[in-house]
Image (cartoon, rainbow, N blue to C red; front, side):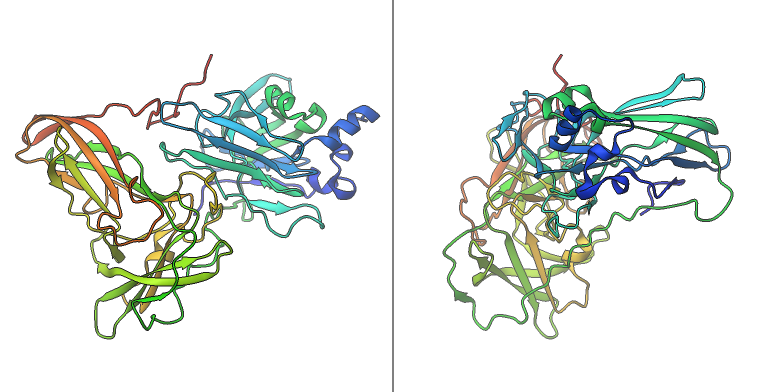
Length: 495
């Protein structure tokens, strides 16, 4: 998927490559460093890497150009790791810097939401006369496309590929593996004329002080040239696909309904509050998005096996010990092929249920949605024990199969959730005949209790709403949950 129409030509003289032995950032300083400054640079948890120069291309008469600055953060002597949690939806996010010498609690409110560290990097562009023509502070997600910069660094980075965007996320982990660089994916549109400029990028002074990063390695300056695009080789797109392996079912269908033992770690299915709530254009249906996630210390793994000549599969839940070794399985239900245009893949029955409840919490309407394809669409809380920071099946194609599939594996990893958005078939309640008043949207995981989990008493989440209007023009009022704001920033920055 291409995110940029124009791109950046970066010279091979990237500062990370110009570093001395073992990537010593002191060798990257733009001016000679004193011994004290060199020591501080070498002990900093990370340093900022930037190209030696950059070129961006303008196409046609576009007013803005897309400039990829090629910025990276590089971890030095140990992993740089931030853990963020929100105890309840009434609480602000608390972030800890976890390091070998001890955990440092950052000021409450450092993180406004879980999408990254706010105002972490500032980009300033000056023209040849020295006048500032562009200045912007950027939120930075430390999780991204990683690359190893030291030959003795670990072969893999354990950290997530990105930061959560669900408004009801409760915990996240951001990290830079020791000896690894993470590319900073900043918004790249700039309203600049063709010509020569000087770019300065810097970690905000507040964060440099907080993490002990001297300016010599927390700031970079380099020339930028913007010119008219004329030929091939000046476009470069970005491919956002995961390189993880596709989840595979067991080699063959179990020979019995139950096999081995199920003692040990288990998933723990929970529901987030319904969100994205709105009345459809016709005014008679209430649409919503819902997420069921796994807070347990083991993945929920359900395999389906198709019997010859049938359009259903028998479903088996598999169990694993703390080392990830399979310990048993049990038959828990069925899969069926869901041919609706917004689905068109295999669904597991009885994973969740949606109900609209009256003010006294008795049933008013039940959603027609009765089956689900499990995929790790959202990071909900990567701080739970056993969380999988890099789940494999993050999209529906890899986890939900084709119509002619003979078997399938659907997985909900620890820490991740599966969101069904309001445009999906069945994600609605029919409001015809319902009186105006207070209602609750109930999202319920494992409604029939067929799946094995460590706790079945925390499966239901209610979202209070108020329905008004007239037939054919119904309205919905949605009270806020705690301090969470679904659209935009999750909470205001404290002044």
